[in-house]
Image (cartoon, rainbow, N blue to C red; front, side):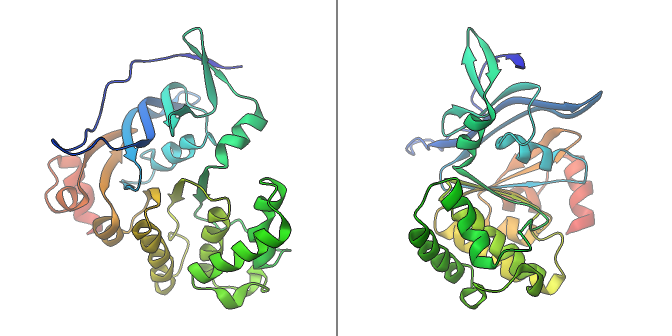
Length: 274
């Protein structure tokens, strides 16, 4: 199994003075990732607290999606530590080193983390309802009747109550993405990860998906979102990080970063997308 030294964990972002401490759901310290000789992440430090919407922006190849995939161990980190709800992701610590968990243990960790990808990844041979109940019944051991009832409630939540028995091929891209969100929510995650969920959609379909995400945020879901939708970042985000070249170049409140970026690289990027 792979091993890494455990780094120190200095605080990165703190609660405002006089406010109660916030529960940290995602804690990244010095996270590094390389593919061969290419270092994609060069030491990412970030906290995401309960109920917070953290938005990651930046050019293609900046490391945003890679970092997101590291949070649920779809990519193995090469340095630093990642914790979700206080637990190391994909590893256990022993004798000052990190040892990778078995696949079954990693799968158990992922049950508390929902992820929505650019592509919808629905099973084409299953109905919408069958897609949603698959993981709760097979992985979560939820009784079929319970999973079915909860799936129907989730379809109401994402605005698709009449599509339970449709097949993915009969849905628009925006509808498929909303089904993918419902499927992720079916496992009752404490954390949702969104990897550019609207980038593959026609422009007129983007609003419905962002509307569902906005409602999740209002309901208190902790979210990390990689996106190019700057309006969503400004309106819904609580924290924004601009990444480039595998590092966080600038971070802060979305309105502050988007309206008054301090770093020249952030200014140059935003001048092209706003």
